Each structure stands twice: as C-alpha cells, then as structure tokens.
Length: 404
Image (tube, rainbow, N blue to C red):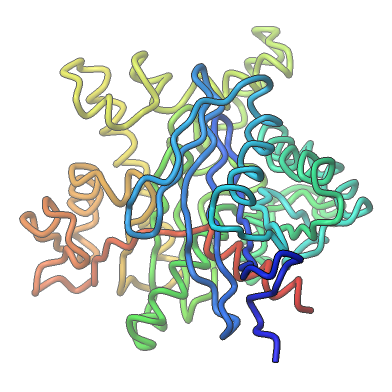
C-alpha cells in the first residue's frame, strides 16, 4: 500500500513529498519546508530566508539548527531567489518533491476569509485589494506569480493575515463614517492574523483553561500590533483598515490624528505618493530617532532621540493594551511574541511597568532570561513569552486545501 507522504520515482528511489510555506516581506522572503509524513502530519525539514537586499542570498537551517545552505543569489533577487530555492529543494535536499506551496497574503478583504487555492481568478481578485495594502499586497503576490511561471502545475494556497479577525464584532470593526462606506469595505480588518492563530493554538496546547482566558497578545516586530482574544478568537486588535494603524512600528507611524494628514495634503501640498512613503517608510522608530527603525540599534544607542523612540514605542503599546483590556472586560493573560516581543527584555519590562495598575507584575530575572513565564507569583495577570511560527500555520492550511 502506498504511504501518504512517499512515492517511488522512475529510478526506484524513495522520494519524499514536501510542502513549501512562503512569507514574503519587504526585503526578504522567509520560508519553511515541511515533509508530509506517512501519518499525514507535517515535519519541519528546513527553515530559512531569501535575503533580497544589497547582498542577496539564500540561507537555511535544519530543525536542529544545522546550517544546510548559505549562498549568494545572482540576477534579479526575487525571481532568482525562488528559482534557486526550488532547485536546492529538489536537487540537493534529499530528493524531495514539492506537492504544494502556501503563501502569507496580507489582505483578504471581505471576500477571502479562509485559505483558498490560488487560481488566476483568485489572484486577480487579490490584486484588486492592493489599494487596501499598497506596499504589502504586491509583495505578497510577487512570489505567487513567480512560482506559477516556474512550476505551473504546482498547487498554491493563499493564507490571509486578515482572516483571523473575522470574529470581531461590527461595533469594533466599524468606523464612524457614512454607512455606505462600511458597505464598500471601509472598515477595520486587523492584521498579523497568522501569527495570532499560531499563538492561540499554542495556548490551547499549553492549557485549554489558559486559552479561554481574557488574553492580549503583543506581536511586536518591525510591524507591530496587539490582539485581544478569548477562547482563541479575536475580539479586538490595534491595526485597522491598513497596516499603518495602531502601535508605533519600525518605520510606520501607527495611529495618527487624521487632521494631521489633511494638513499635510491641504496646507503643505504633500502629494499622495509622498505622504504614503513618509507614513510607511520614514516614520515610526526611524522617524522619531533619526537613527534606525531597528529596536536593537536603538537599545544599543546612547542618543537621547533613540531613548525617546523606545519610550514612545512602549508607551503606545501599554496604552493600546489598556484599551483592549476594556474590550475584554478585564485582563488575565499577556503574551509577547515576534522579534521585539520575544527578544527585548527592556521593552517587555517598560510595557508591563505601565500596566501594573491592571495587576501586571513582571519578574525581572525571568524577563532578563527570556523565560517562558515572566510574571511574578503574585501577578494577577499571567505573562508569557511565546515564539510565533507563521510558516507552520501556512503549511497546515496548505495541506488541508490540497487535500480538500
């Protein structure tokens, strides 16, 4: 009887089936490669990224951290990178055969609220959502088109960052604009949904009782947001119509008085494209510090502007967390995740100190050690650090859609 994750090729050697999960960003594409085991479970084979910056390269490590690949890329980084990745998987990584690829897509709009097979018609529909995420959506769709050209018979699946927040109540998602605009899709969507879906699953694995608690998850990275969840479902989040909203981010401004934007347009004559570039690329930690949008660089700097940027980041995160606690009707669990959330003890400390009035009591030694649980025994709120894994969620959805 043929095993579910295996087949014999013409040379009678064992060939393993694998699923590729791609997570495209502005300057890199992260990926995870998963074997489909005979039990139909997924086993991580490799995790890495395609760096698309000034020195493009492909790097990958096995699940145990062993370096598998580290090589430069030639030619057009995005196209050459995908091509090189496919060749490496199929030629050098133990004779694996890709049976599907899954993608993180930032915006699904109102129509795409669950993972979907990516047909030409679906891709066209997703392209029409570009005005809702003008910088992120094209980056999400580019690897899909490249793969379709390189491997036209390879099934591809789209997984949406907005989908997890479909459970948010209309009173939370609605803007106070004329009703016709809500009907046209001008509403709060929320993002980072694949990360929040993973964290919700991990909390349930740790303890069903923990997953049922009134929880705020802080996804703090170059892009940052908070999500209020209960019973593993999103009930509120800080990002809204676009990925600009909410917290201060690496180069994004976060929530801003719309009057400021009107002033820039009407009084300063700043054109739409220039304003978009400023809000997405020149603001946030970079704009405040004038040094960097990277939290690690700011924490290492003695420049007072760097300190101000870090302080504002923590202040805004704590203020938004208090607002989400209001939506939840209390706070029982606080989870930090993503690059800053998982690795910056000073930022976690600063946020928790501002939330002491909510019963948040952080344990300094545990926090400094990046322990899994960083709350003091007397903390009324359980405080955890949980590493996120968006690629594993993409791979799971891809397997299910391929078998559907």
